[in-house]
Every structure is written in structure tokens, then in C-alpha cells.
Image 1 (cartoon, rainbow, N blue to C red):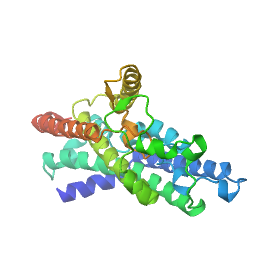
Image 2 (image 1 turned 30 degrees about the horizontal axis):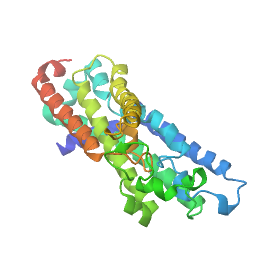
Image 3 (image 1 turned 180 degrees about the horizontal axis):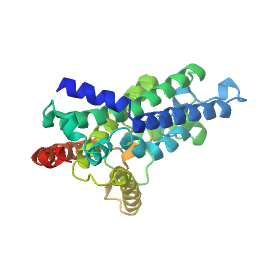
Image 4 (image 1 turned 90 degrees about the vertical axis):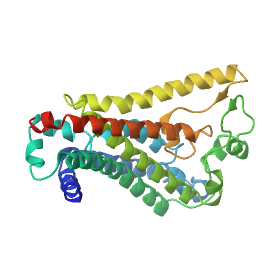
Length: 294
């Protein structure tokens, strides 16, 4: 199993899709960092926003608004479509000739998760470190410049609707150390990206006719949860007895997006993705002969 996993990881690192995804991700985060530097270039040091809020991981930053749009595609591109290509080229039998087919299937899923985690996590971490080096570590929060109710917004006061959760998640960690707070979200984003990449690869065992079709599910999930969250918020503002929580997936993957993040909802999505992986693996193992024959 470990030899097959090592083999799959090496194939991943040499694949064209992985390299393209990594170049896009690193290039995007570096470009966004340069834009933040240029935006603050002529400002007085005392007026510059604190370092962590310039990073791409910060939920209220311009960088996150851009990165979150391309995120679904970066998750799928590195390795989630590799099975479709190998099946099309009839090379699966050659790969598993000395190893068992189950180890090939399982290592394929694990490798895709690793690829998605690297493509998302490493560039985000590089961007975050560069922001910590260049920008000042002060207490200039972006929200202080937007409105006066900074503390009220953190604690969920002065609301126009009821919600399942009124304050921002991990609030105490944010107050103690915004740097650790941001690093925690980089870990969350990286881990969830790995799970999504693995799930799409598992789906490719069944939907193995088209690469393009594999980019649709994750993008569809993000868009649907965004519109559903907006509809639920509108309903909550009209109905005082209704308790709102954000269903938008990206709100859970970056700090300071919305305070109404109900974490059992994200855990439920993770559980569904794990079930998808398990069910698709079982299906693939039952149809191993047709795959090996191409």
C-alpha cells in the first residue's frame, strides 16, 4: 500500500495538471500580496491595516474574495481527474499489474487529497508569511474603519435577526492571537480542500467519461450554499422567530466572514463527503475487472 501511495504521489508531482494548479495558486497569492503592498505603499504606518488582515486567508480581505472564487477549480485540478485520464488511456492494468487493485484505488483517493491540500495550503501559507514580514503588527482592524460597533459586531449584539450562533467562532483565540487564529483557518481550509479533492476523485470512479463534469459538483455546491444562505437571511429578517445560520460554504473556511457559522453544519458536510468516498470506493472495487480491462 505504501509503495503504491509513493508511486501515485510521484506521478502527481510530475503531472501537468498539478503543476498548472500550483503555478496558478502561487501566482495568484503572490499577485494579491503585491496588490496589497501597492495599496498601502503611500500610507502612514499608523494608518495601515494590521498584517493578518492583508492576507488571502482573511475573510474580509480583497484577496479572499478573489481566492474563494477560484478555490473550487484549484481543488479539483491537481489530481481529481487523473483516474479519468488513466482509464481513457487504458493504463490502469499496467499500473496494478504488480500490486492489488484496492491499493491502487485507495492510494488514488489519498493522493488526490494530498495534491489539493498542497495546492491550497502552501500558497496560502506563503502569502500569510509574506504579509507578516512586510506589514506592521498593530491593532488597526479593518472593521474599525467601517463602523463604530466593532466590539458589538464581534459579540453579535445589535442584530436585526435571530441566529443559531451570535458571535464569531474561536473568538477568544482571535482576541488572544490573531496570527494563531489565521493559522487555524489555514489548517481548516487545507484539510477541507483535501477532503473535497479526495471526494471528487472517488466520484470519478463512477463518472469517468468526462473531466469537465468533475469540476461541476464542488462549484455547484459553493454557489447553491451561497444563494441558500442569502435566502435564509432574508427570511430571518422578516420572521423574528426564525434562527438563521450561514449555509455558505466559504464562510466556514476563512476568519471573520460571518458570525453566524454553525459548525455542526460543516461537520455534516464533511460527513457526507466521507460517505461519498466510502460508497464510491466500494462501487469501484466491485467493478475492478472492467476498469483494469480499460
